Image 1 (tube, each protein chain N blue to C red):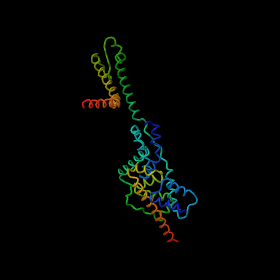
Image 2: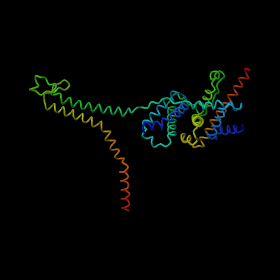
Image 3: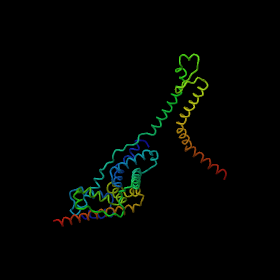
Image 4: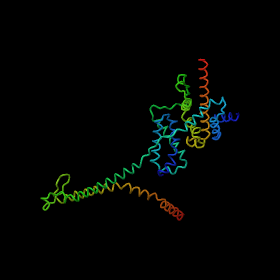
Length: 171
Length: 173
């Protein structure tokens, strides 16, 4: 068992190889452990038992941000479309029957607007706001496209080659 | 990096990362939080992970840094200073702590963080010195020195503990 003692010596000096450490671990798994080595058995048992510890289940965030951004864009777009549709149909649907034939009336937030020009201005401003909301919601896409174009490796390489050529020509 | 790649390259190191967190933080709930936090952060930065060559070393290094950061931020730190000596349990404690495995585990936990992390990476995870050195940002020689110190301290603790047990036995015989 001199060999095992040597292995212990190397082990405690931090000089044992992974293979030699496996021999020691297997030694303690067997039934022929010498009484003087028994004292170290719990140590190797602990290493083995700690290796059995498993990680708990990990909950990765689902594509929350992308989904919420997409949902937000859909809601904004749908709201815009709904607002436009509402403004378009309101003059025809909500006008009281008695005034339908003679007067131009648009009801906004329960308030009647008889002035056609004012109603159009209001509708146009609503169109403008809806357009702005839609444009703003697509801005990140445009930014991403611009960045992608700026980081075009071929373009950068072509420009670099051109610069080198220019330098060579000047020399 | 898509879900499948993340699974095979990052999540497959969860067990080792969790055990490292347990070793450093010494608390199951904190270790679980650390693992969840780390994997969430890595998932959110998954596009940047493709350039990494040694994923295991990267994940374990990140876990160690995160745990040390958690300890630093914690008001009631459980960290034991490097010069702290292990106090063997009293006979009364020994009666309570009859499980020898728990006893040895607590001895390992009493080692300074660096030594116990290196010890567990070598003896529990069976990692090579080269990789441990990479994770710990130190030379292989420094890893060997720390490993040797940790193992020798454990040996001394075990032998002292046996001696105390014998003394108690002799006294009450």
